[in-house]
Image 1 (cartoon, rainbow, N blue to C red):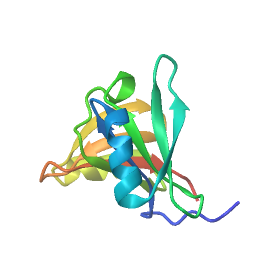
Image 2: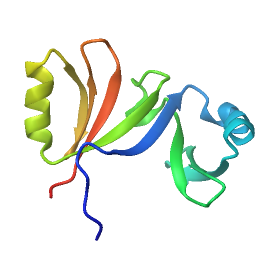
Image 3: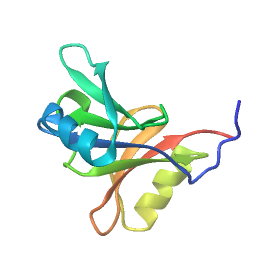
Image 4: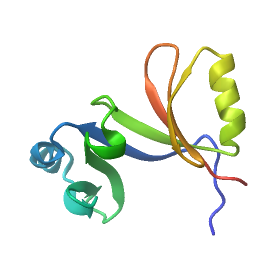
Length: 121
């Protein structure tokens, strides 16, 4: 298993009311290919670059993502989510969502959102 570089971006998602509407835009602009990602009663999209690497997700603002703003959300690796959330609070940020163990969405003091994903060393 590869060593995790804490603080490294791991993934990017865009959550919008209609993700399917944006698929043609990102296919044309970024040369990405879309494949459906089953979410139960609907599908989000995994976007793949020309080299075959999954690089991003286009998500509908439904279910767990219903409250997310329509911005690109970067996921960052942290060694301890508990410690990271203490630092969020101590430095004027807000925990927006912590629905799953090891995962949280935060808002920084300027209002920007970021996802934290715990990946112990």
